[in-house]
Image 1 (cartoon, rainbow, N blue to C red):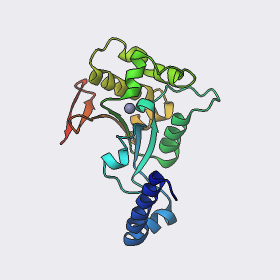
Image 2: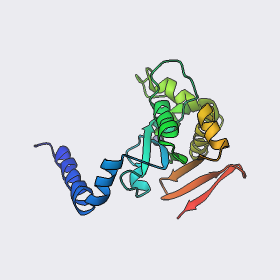
Image 3: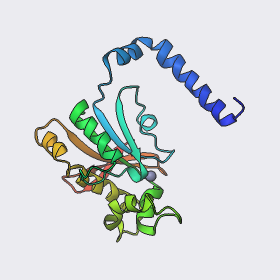
Image 4: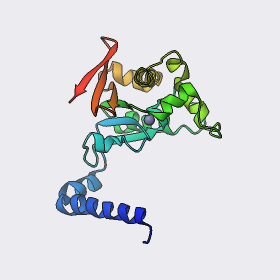
Amino acid sequence: MDDPVLRRLLAGFRAFHARHCEREAESWERLVREGQRPEVLVIGCSDSRVDPALLLDARPGELFVVRNVAALVPPHAPDGAEHGTAAAIEFAVRVLGVRHVLVLGHGRCAGIAAAREGVPDGCGDYLAPWTRIVADAVAGLEDPAERERAGVRRSLENLRSYPWVREAEAAGRLAVHGWRFDLERGRLEGYDEAAGGFRPLAP
Ligand SMILES: [Zn+2]
């Protein structure tokens, strides 16, 4: 393997193997034997700086994760087309029975910026319609952080357009949360729906 990038990745996998398949083999074997039972679905951004498993120091099996541009939840639209994010949400909620759905937005999000300023040239096929999910929610907002918060709120609204999300929430089987990772300050804030604003969560 000559490519230094691939060499680094394989070294990373060796470290994973040494920890999870050897030192902590018992817990790994249980996951293999019993299957996954994550209690949390995370909808995060594809941005390479904001991996939910790293940010939340999660263990294998702990988080069911779907990542996409800008951590967006599209509205319920069962029209027979290919909806990757909705498929992951459906599986997590209806099959795995997760207890929490966490929308995890972040600072300096290029996807949210594109929703207001337009997508890069030549990215009209998929990026443009995708970022339109949040375009009207961010249109009047000057502050990038406020736009990112509006993106999280829009995703929470859209989550509740799925009837089985609403049902699970109403039955008390599911809670939905909107968090934003402030990249510059290294802090996490959460949406307080009762108060209608974001407040610091950690540190
Ligand atoms: Zn992003």
